[in-house]
Length: 248
Image (cartoon, rainbow, N blue to C red; front, side, top):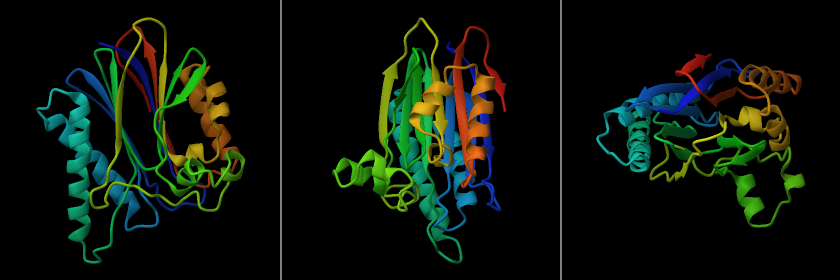
């Protein structure tokens, strides 16, 4: 069984009243499940949406009998989305509740993930950072269609507009898996846009060359130095040789 040093961090933005991000890690079927949700502030009760979604995802994934873990993640997305939609419909105001959702499950040398929204999952190995997920927002769509350059996308006023999120009818996520090398070290970073909106991929790549404690301190310091305009959260996994460890 793979062994990882687990570092979790979440806090509200500098001028925020509540933290709309939630992170969770749990051992299921002798594998490691990581969950990150960022409630969508434009909709109803984002801090509640992220919290109940993380709980629902954890319970749904654990209860599933599906042996194919990628299929289990897909099923969990569908069921969690149905749960969140029905929950919001039962509220007095009947306003939608939405959240990003990123799931990463590691077991037997394989990593499986599901993604919807603009939080991200990164993989770091041999000093190279790979973004495994693709943002479901207006800026990414404009980039894909050639209407914006990468330079124009930086600090764009429409960066907060999501095109996909959990809590919408028939929300469709992205899913994939990869085999992990038996030798050598690697890291995973799951983070909300409160980090990626202020820290570039090149900066994250340099930061991730360090040990987990230094990575945590450097990310937090950099985000705070740039105003911490949004809630910021991450889960950092670093492959180690002994038992599961957790820093939070």
